[in-house]
Amino acid sequence: MPSPTTATDPNKWPHLIAISIACLLGMSPWFSATAVVPALMDYWDIGSGEAAWLTMAVQGGFVVGALLSALLNVPDLWEPRRVFAFGALTAALSNAAIPAFHVDFNIAVALRFLTGVSLALVYPVGMKIMATWTQSDRGMAIGMLVGALTVGKAAPHLVKALGNVSAWEPVVHAVSGLALLGGVIAWLAGKNGPYASPTPRFHWRHIGKSLRVRSLRLANYGYLGHMWELYAMWTWIPLFLLASFRASGMVERFSDATIESLAALAAFAVIGAGGIGSFIAGLVADRWGRSKTAIASLITSGACAASIGFLFGASPILVSAIALIWGFSVVADSAQFSASVSELADREYIGTQLTTQTALGFLLTLISIRLIPAVLDFVGWEWTFVLLVPGPIFGIWSMWRLMRSPDATKLAGGRG
Image (cartoon, rainbow, N blue to C red):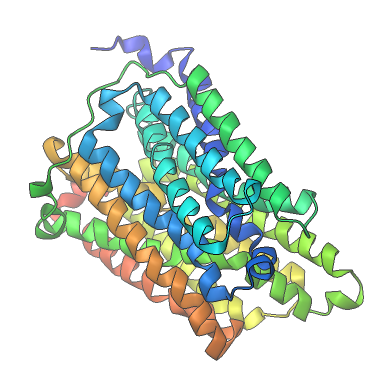
């Protein structure tokens, strides 16, 4: 057993910060193609529907990687920091290969899939390392890691904003370099803490419990509602901002390159705001309750999804402000669904339940990401994001039912 003084171990915070930074950098290739999608559409002469596959491939690869990692029990067979570093390295190499070898579109999609498989060895393993350093403040730590992950996914937009927006290759190379640096940090500073324990094994026979056990079913429903909205928003809000800025009349005052830089900077701020939201929600959920925190986040993000399209072409400041609120709230509840499952499931099938939740959620994102450009062609930006509103509504209903169930006493130390 760890000693009573472990919670104040002077090594705790340096390691939590190091792993968070490593995750921020390591996950940065996720949206590297999304950040430069207009240039890639021109380069390969593809439409927005085909361009969606550059992100969808990462989503699918992540699901495959997460399932393989769980089935093979990778984080327990190999030292987690080495697994993290290997995942970051392979993600960096597969992502950088796209501009390095000037591959065609189909090969690029395959390489993006491999990037997703590799990133499944980064974020989940980083979460496992974080858990070995925390106990009562685990909600805060997971929120901190999700916050780092969120800023990492926003990083390509910052790289684009600060660089040459007309060239996509330097952006992809730079982001790949960041991932490589993240792997080095994890290798050097990602050792396990005093609360390390074996990962619960993945067992196919436990998958059905996610639907048979009512409380787990509701927590997973809440997560699915959240995921329907989250990645579609992250994928398409940069293009929305760029199109809205151009429609607002900025073209009369600024060059198109300047508008692209400003839109990229706004996209970084919008997605990155979720990092702050995740950390704050982690603190709040440990004290106020996971269900209530998730509901508040879903109400806010759903309202933004329903309204932001009607501001298309309005003042860039106003549009950016609503988008920032959306970015802050859309991911703030993310860690709480995983935390809820870990508290509701029996020890022997926690690993299976968390893997099942992740796989189902990311598979669902393939649908909402692909639907956005299809709907956009028919109704325009004014109505497109309304497509995402059913997700938060379903999530609110699910978490409200969970909050009122007898099993709510298992969440956040009895806070629900």
